[in-house]
Every structure is written in C-alpha cells, then in structure tokens.
Length: 342
Length: 66
Ligand code: SF4
Ligand SMILES: [Zn+2]
Image (cartoon, rainbow over the protein chains, first blue to last red):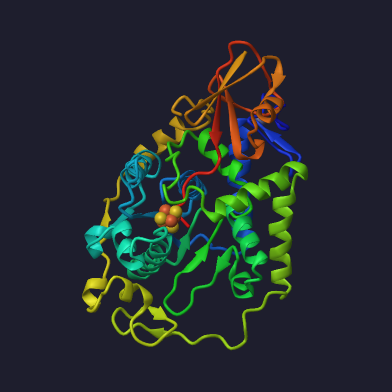
C-alpha cells in the first residue's frame, strides 16, 4: 500500500479513515489530528500549564512528545507504584521515562512520586492488607493514582491533567458501562472533565486515536516505551472488551470509532445527564481533598493517614535543562521508521 | 516457509502470502498487532517472501495510566 501524500510505502492503513500514510506523513497527520481534538473539545489553550501522567507505555510518552512538538508547556508525573512482577515493571518504566525525558523533552520537568517513599508501602503491599490478599491491587492502585495526580496538580499549580487514554481504552470502558447501564459513569465519560472542588481539570487528547495508531506513532518516532503491560492488567476486563471490539472492527471497519463518537454526540445532546441530586462533597477532615462522605476520605482511610502533614507529596523534580539539547534530539528522532530496538 | 515472531512465540507459514492472510492462518487478530518486515513497519497487504524477518508488535501496552 502507498502513502496517499507521497506514494512511498505506507506504514499504516487506517481503514476507518480510508487513509494510508508513510512514516513521515503519518507523524504529521498524528500531530495535526491531536491539535484538532484539543480544539474540538476545547481541552486547553496556549497558556495552560499541563501535567501529563506518564506510565512509560506508548500512549503517555507519545502524548508528552506530541504536546511538546505542538509547543505546549507540559511537565510529566510518574507515580512509582512498586509493582515489579517478573519483569521489574515499575523499575523498567521509570528508567524508560527518564531516558525519554532527557532525550526528547529535556526542557520539561519530570515529577516522580514514589508511593513507598511517600506513604510507607508499595501498592501490592497496601492492597494485600486491604483485601487480605484476595483479588488484584487495581482498586487500591486506581484510588492512589487519582489522589496523587489531583493533589500534585493542585500543589504545583497545574491547570490541566492530561492522560494518554486512546479510543480503544475509552470504547472498552464505554462497552462495560453500557452492558451494565451504569448511567452515572456514562454521564461522566468524556474527553474533558471540568475541574471541580479541588479536583484537577482532566483531558484525553488521544481519545479519537485507535490503539494501533498511538503504537504506530511511538514506533515511527523511535520512542523507547515499556512493551510489557502491568502484570496485573493481563487478562483484565478492559482487555477482554478490547478483544471483542476488535473482532467487530475486523468485520466492520470503523465500528469502534462510531461506537465512541456517536456516544459522545448523544451525550453532548443531553441523553446522559448526571442525576439531579448531585452528591454533596465534603473536605476530608485530614487532608482537605474532596470526598463524598463526611470524615476521612477513602485515600486517608486506606493509607491510615491521620495528620495533614503526612498526606503531602514529596516529588523529586529533575531540574530544567537548556533548549539547545532539545533541538538535537528533534533531529535525531525525526522520521525514523526503523524499529530495530524491539 | 516464513517464520513469524510474536512475543516469545514463533509461528511458521508458507511464503508468498499476504501478511493479513498469514495472521489469519496463525489465528492472530490483525487489529491487535502491528507488522514489521525486516524491521520496517508495513501494511497488511504486503506479500511475505522467503527470507523475510517478520515480527509482530502487540498494540496493547501500559495499564498504569488508567
Ligand atoms: S493494572 Fe496495574 S497499573 Fe493498572 S490499576 Fe491495576 S495494578 Fe494499577
Ligand atoms: Zn508520505
């Protein structure tokens, strides 16, 4: 297959867009499409101070890369979960992110919050205590990550929190919520969640890209990402729904895109309203973050935090470097489609 | 024969078929992988030839930004 723009060999064929592109033109298309999504959903403007949640996977590193190329001011946040498995997952992730930061976005700051250093235990440890060893640590992990992201964004004055969720992530969650008619969740699933009561404004600039598109961008740009999934993600429900949706996509190209985009349209037209009697939020009596029940918030209860001081985050920030290094790297990763690193 | 590598597994298919047909033969969902031939990303209409080094890259990764 040939690139529509220049006729050289294509690296990707997007059947749902009837568009095949070579590495160079795909990179341009991907960056331009991100900017279009940012504008379409009014995510942020040029003055925004953006905090990108980076995991070391392809989506979040690609997002940091694209926002930087588009000229936005964005810093990274990595949360060290202490999840190793057989693959040293957390160590490997941090190492890749540090390399990426130094080479590709040296002018940006990387905040690293190590959960064990900050709160005394790793995610698997706290999860074992809370579930008495049953089940996966994902609930404890999700709660902790949300808390840390909101808190760090507020403490350091970021106006937007950006995550690398792609369309496959969003469509899988949508399918899960639709099958259970979780109307409350459906009302809140959106590319932008406005800031409220001490919670940061959240945006998903990649929400219109298929997962294979973000992966292709990462390879085309030579981004060295963590290829393995979190050991606890293997076999989870989200992946199960992704597989189902891909079967549908094979039979009917564009099915995933339509499922998600038509949902957003219906949502924008008011079909999924948040229930009128909005639960009132209180400030947690220890840390002050918003919570639905009076008393301590779920985070302070789980981590058994009793003083405001111990909830505070101590992020280790890498100092800012010069812009000239950055230009070199732009040239270095420009249009390589060689994937010998894999 | 062509050897296809995916994660730590190896598959064999006969040569001179398209990558898409090869994926079908070995039972891998074409939507879930990217195809590289001789270390270059390609589209799935590419015909696999004797001696090609074919590696698949899973598109799903990550999990900790959820
Ligand atoms: S899959 Fe891993 S990173 Fe994701 S929520 Fe579960 S434990 Fe945390
Ligand atoms: Zn081209």
